Length: 600
Image (cartoon, rainbow, N blue to C red; front, side, top):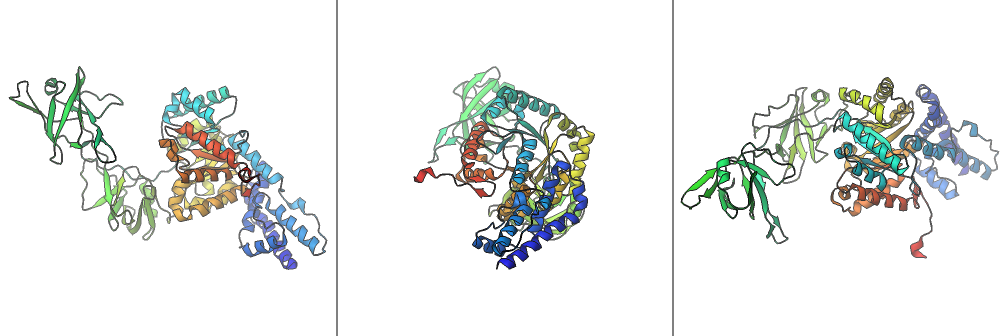
């Protein structure tokens, strides 16, 4: 058996060295400090091009390495196994370390070095960095940013899809100031918006104000709703109760304790009680759910209850437009924007696409996902002007599709610019204030080369690059993307699990993220574990059990990203605690045999 294993391993070794010859042109473009990592990546791809499961079983039975943790030093690991098998069979073994780009020590050390160059130094007892997306308030709130740094933020993420360059510069300035105060380094990542494919604007919905009391578990109202009544033309105060405008003379008749009567949009009899009156209007309360439209008459009796005074409300904002879709419905995805003043035709469901040029690149029978994968469809007819989609996945009760929701084409090969005009403008700010830049929706090596060229032109040569893997094509081209990124000063990979799960299929996501982790380790490239990590805690203050388990998987990456939320500081501390605990149990794929104190 040993002789057969030796033969198989020599064949694998030959394939690895041959891969270097095949990709010699790509290797020549890699920066010198990344050359060994690029060679190791090629060796990994050659190793994993065949099914090695039977070979692994036989090697494990002999008590030698089964190659299952060879990512960081592939050729060196194969050579070690070959050397042992030669000794077992009484054959001479000649040292081949001169052909090995890295060894079992230098390979992991390169990953550590590249991670520190991109993401900054590590916190004691926690090898995994924590990245946090900054809210808009971070541009003006020193206390907010200081709290994030003190809680344990290692990298601050600025999303260039929101706010303005002046805001981004203010955010970065506050991060640097807070980091200096804490006497540690905090890196700044700026995420380019990229070519966003989303649903276009829809005609606005009806103007309806819904007022609903707080109810207990038995359905009894425990807290009334409050409505502020303002003179017509008065702007609503910020962060106030729901507001609507009424006639000023009618408003002047109100006094505390008076009742206002109405029939709401459903013809339900309702009444509200005036609880305060002042120079700027009045406040009324009610204990029954009420729907008010501009056509809802509001009535009250005069001082001697002989005359009824009536007015109609104004200033009621229209509801966000939405299309309700059911399985079997046909939806037209159009190149032309819809007329916002034209009411929607219930017999013809249609929505515009914000990047109309993609419609001509989609073919009949290909899948389309809408709104983060909540709605699934198949293209039934296709033209550059519009796609006719049949809805094939939606809840029994239907799904609402609104404006500015994501559209994914997992089966389509889309030719889109790597950098939009806005991205190129934003790079001027990136070059001034950022340590690293996120390339959104990267799909092919030329996208990376365009970014590196644009950074050089903006004098951002030292800015590191993060490849955001968000599409199926980006995942399939990952090795080529990595080789292209290795021409820059530093590079990493972000597993953007939201869009990627939609494109690959949710059931395949666990497999895909594993493969990205393996490939990145072979390239000695740090990984950022992103999307919905501890999202419930960041938004509500309480994590789910599944989120805790998911966050603990982040120990296999070099960085974990959290999104913004009202409880983000507490969420950082929770993640910090989880990562510190898991550091004693796991490093990359390798379990660590720390003493199990609970069972002493």
